[in-house]
Figure 1: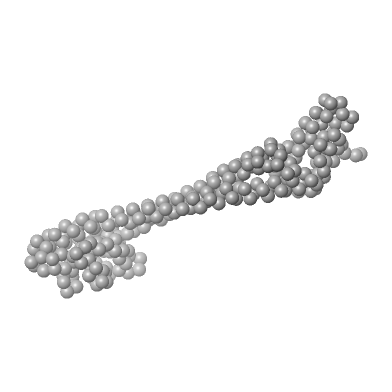
Figure 2 (figure 1 turned 180 degrees about the horizontal axis):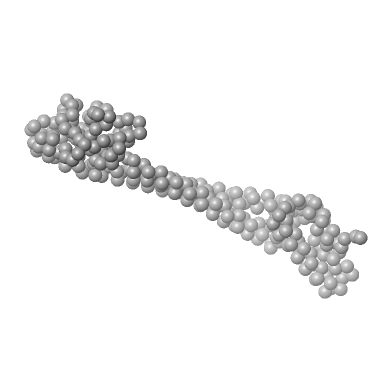
Length: 271
């Protein structure tokens, strides 16, 4: 038993454009609706073969299939061209936001040490003994989050300290101490692997002598916050890229349906 013209046309189109799943059902439903509308219009005009007239108006299935594939490629190209600038903008924006956030977290880590070091330097310059500016219990740099204070004399020897690491008072390289000069020197100090300190070094000069004050605090909490910021930034970046891709596809589909040679036709229509 022969198929009616519409069914035969759809079967031929399916062979030429092997779609699957939802895409196949959607395109076939659109084609069927278009052909049935054309057949109804032909019947209202008293055509002898409304279905055959609808198929003739639709055209050769091979031509329609080529138009379908062409429009699909155009859709993909337009979507990519719309998405790429958005992806670059999102990447730059998220990267800048992360860099600013990381810089703020790291800079804030120096604030308490700066105050303590500068106040201690003033007291030492006024003649206070080194032991007077070092208060509190011993701070184990490998474990404690407390702030440690070390006073170093002009010869590079420890005058007083509450810092301890592996049984001795650690010191940063002598160049870091000399770099303080007349200004505050802030450094990330790693006295041993796995132990990172936000250190502030301030020099002092007074009648009783000269030297430097080293105040440091563990960066462990700051680095945990930096890791959390990185994870959130990466998640936001991926979500933004996905949203940009969806919007690009929507915009590309609209463009191809309104700017093509035959406006208003669905994506399967021949160009």
